[in-house]
Amino acid sequence: MINRKAIGYITANYSSTYGSVLLKDRPIASVPFMGRYRLIDFPLSNMMNAGIKTVGVVMPGNYRSLIDHVGSGKDWGLDRKKGGLFLVPGNAYGTTKGGMRFLLRDIISNKTLFQRSDKPYVVMMGTNIIFNMDLNTIIEAHENSGAQMTVVYCKATRNVEDETKLEIGENGRLTGVSAGVVYGDNASMDCCIVNRDTLLEIIDHYQAADYLDLLEALQGDFGNIDVCSYEYKGEVVGVFSEKSLYRRSMDLLDQTVADQLFDPERPILTKAHDVPPSRYATGSHACNSIISAGCIIKGTVRNSILSRGVVVEEGASVTNSIINQSCVIKSGARVENAILDKNNVVPVNTELRGTPENILVLGKAPLTSDTTIAR
Image 1: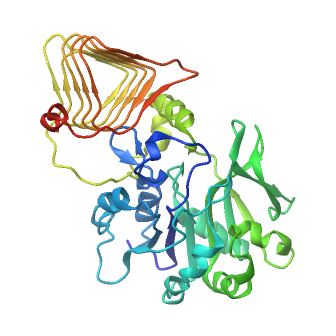
Image 2: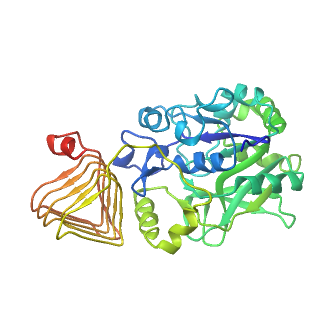
Image 3: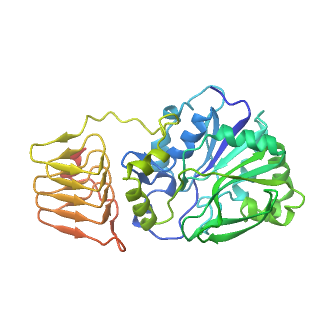
């Protein structure tokens, strides 16, 4: 299926307002999630499932891990002669402030992407608010509304400073935007659909406001530019910090919650790896966990998420933790309430213990002989 109505635009070049060792060598878009995915897999998969075959990804300054992951777009059906995946330039670090992620400066610098398209609409998405949505339903609603832009939102289930609050009138039209949401507010999902002609007019008329986000720049003109809203009622996962990454990942160990995000009719695709199945030794124990391919489990894993190539040796235990690729938990070691990034080796009989309120986070470690063997 090829979507004849829209092209895609994904911003992957923004920073977190919270410092994190997880972002030392990678952008938010390539942060590992649920053992086998990266955050950018979700907007790419949403677009693939809707048949959108032309997608521009705005690249950050620290783009190495992102290019390594998305490559030519083959795993999302975007390695095409016509259309396909375009890795486009933008402001090296986008914007670090909270709120929407569509920096007008990036949109202006990539005007050619929109000019060369013959599709009437542009679907714009960020990467750290993830969901599994039928974009064709949103495109149809946008067409029926007659609006020039439609912004997708959900009802906030928690207080988040980094989300954008949408003020919506009785007719469903936007009347204002502001930073930060509290429980029950209309929270932007960093997803919108805009008429391509309207976007080109915005590019021409808002050059002087290129330091603003798209909706910030338009806020004073909501009376002249018709911006509609669409409420999404499915599962929405916002990843803004180490704490939110940990909490939302743990939430998804509940199968009823995970089923709302991972719909088999709209699969979430990721980079393919040729990795053998995980091996569970006699005497090992694993419960309520997600364990990716290529792991070797000889110890105990409870309520945890393990990426590929993780080794848990005999007598070791991992509880309530996220362990990224090629980590080794040595014999007798204990890891609890923690996030371990790639290649970490926990020495024999060592304890790494955080608390649910103050999780322990270790950044990426250099390759050693132990992690090389694990890979």
